[in-house]
Image (cartoon, rainbow, N blue to C red):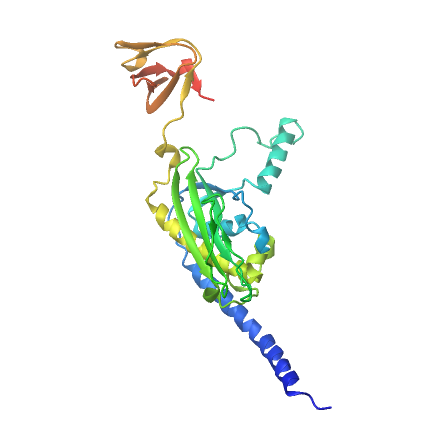
Length: 311
């Protein structure tokens, strides 16, 4: 039986695709590895950081896992933050602490209150727009999550692109100290899928398997590498001590007392203080005496034996 020309041509195309796929995969992961290698590293920790998912859950429609694990990989590689777990690991830790509070753990376990490290910053990975290759048949469209709240349009239907945003919020002041956008596209990765590369073969265990093995996942990965690279550069001006940089926590009078213009109860009386009065420490101390200001702008010294941290 003679094989038709069209059938032979189809078989050749299938064979060519099978041969080319590994090359595409290798090219894609090589490019991702090159981009990841460009993430700046820090000579000292900027502070501690926890990563939180945005509320819009944009990753599931794309068939991806939460971007939380992906950003953790970048944070660990850069060494710029002390990474704190506020996800599943933290939930398990809380269960252990509950066992300790119930007296179930062995003596000497050294687990109790006052040991959990505070997060200086919160990093939120969001997406501004996405366009998954639709084979030229239509626009899947883009969307803005909590960052903008508006529908985007006009995205190319012939390429996969992703525009993402990383925001860093100071936990104490709620100030957004950084916000960076990142872009990734099909042309950046060669539109190949596969394993290896900078993922180190452990992507599934990290929870970023689909970012490695899907086209849109690779595109989003490059977009976040772009955003995180800019982010580290943007945060270079921070002192590395967020606790000191922020205003002191307010205190509340628990006993009636007096504010003096000098420590030790010396000098002139500035004002009388009633129980419940809110005061704001300046950071200056002299023994048990703290320098404070009140809501009217008065400044003076008050014994710390008469107040507690505001709740």
